Length: 132
Length: 460
Image (tube, each protein chain N blue to C red):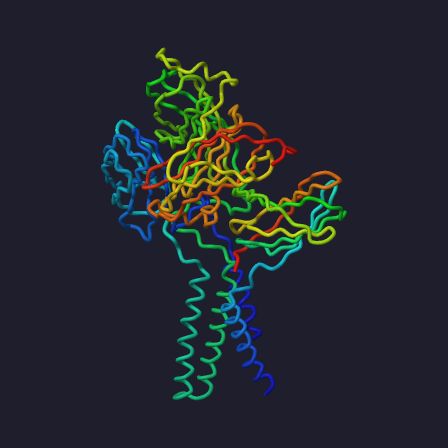
């Protein structure tokens, strides 16, 4: 009896899950944490990589005051986006808000850090999906 | 359930089997576009996508610069034999716009489109493609059809044939539905179907690219004089084998994009040479400025990335008064002054106001018109040349790039403007000559600019 119920319940569950997936259409781009390291600084960029306006949180170490800006390059297509200046949000933490990616695909994010240790551009890579 | 799992795994393996890659980046449902500078006209020949063959083939000739106008003959023939089909349009002088012609094709695969205007003839290679439904779509629809039949069978079985028959049909319904939904959910991960007629190509991930192509740049006559017409010829040769390079792919709506500028930037042409013979590209130009001219040809070999090759030629002085002093002297190369024209001013605004080398900058052009059309697949083009001519950049408008590259908007769509935005990182400090280009009422508008770029550390 239990086995017969399983034959009935399992396909129903599978169908429900399938319909649910189709209706939701998959989740939007999930948040990612992208670590990178240069000669002077180590950075971690946290963002939801999608087209449209994105908010990128940048953590730099060492946490000395610095001027931080972000831009993106799509090497495969030869696209770049202008620099977005990040504002300070606590020691070693910065937030940049703006349009970084103009289309879905593989992008390279450049994090320009100018601080007491020097100026450098640290690059991290991400895949960009469609914004919901 | 145990029987269902192997069935599902087999389906997934079959459906995920990679098809041949789209070598030209053009799917079976996309139009083929060839910009051509022919007989004094700037036209784009648009070969509309075919749904099936044999069938009529719509070919639109978009006249961006009709010049003196005239008849354009079009003939398409298969490279694998069979007949040919011909048609023609008559371009009216002074009327930029779309001129349709109807040809026909009787098979898919490689074809050659001959475009003849005046004394000039261009042979454009193209593949006639017909989109094919991917295997996963066929399996999914078949599974849904089976599920529907099984459901009716189960109901009929329950009414007239008893429990066993009804149970069998119900089982079939469940299996078919699970297969259909599984295939549907997994479909984004399956390889797209290659259209019929696509030339055989290895999967994209194993494509090794192609060797470099090197140009021989010639002009005829050898030293044109100011005020005369001349032919600029580019013959391309493979850097590894020495053979002519004749595998150029349709790249931003042309086989090759050629920019010709005089040393001082007062003369600028962005043209699209005809292909009179395999590996040879020619364009007829008028010499307007004397002195040394630089030639930049941008193209893409099939299955490889974009390349830029350069050359140079000299226009002789015709001895007329009013000729500038020798423009080949770099100290004299101030370049054109920024142009203020049109309702929007047509001035290029940079942000920050003083661009810094190596840092991306936003460049905005207010055209004053909200009815701009795409040209070469983009709302706008920005061509940037360093003062010494050693660097040439070609930037596309940012907003129009954000569309799927395979679904290029049609030339008739007036969906852009008034602001055109570009993002670019100037490689070195110094003065740059730049030209923005866009299309309105099918005509190409070219606006020259001068941009000074500071070194890092300079206040922005």
